[in-house]
Image 1: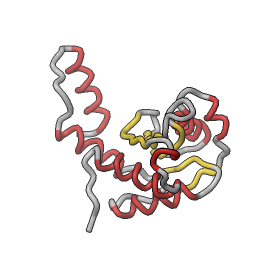
Image 2: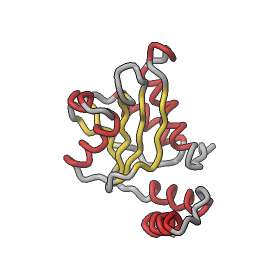
Image 3: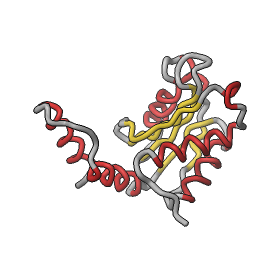
Length: 159
């Protein structure tokens, strides 16, 4: 089943009050949707996050992401900076998937890494506490977040 049909079926189940959680078929469709993406971008002003994300994508046998060089400081003026970064990328480039990482919400709220498709739908995400709490370098935190985001939808590391 493709992702569009999966989403439609889930909506219809909810309307009929017959939705009782995610199914294995839905996760398979979600993973297949991500695997089918030809162009993945990471919006940021430098390549540190892109390199970290690509290292993990390789471990999961997924296509590498391109660095989309944009200054995302304006996203920090929104209530949801990481999601705003992803939406900015969708507005300015032609891509199938965006992986954006930034602040979760208000300053001090920690970080959010979000995987969003070209229709602006959130496919997965992961959070981490504020840097002052976890003490990790940005690269290490990003690797942990992308790993969590992929594991939560059933991807596995390829040995």
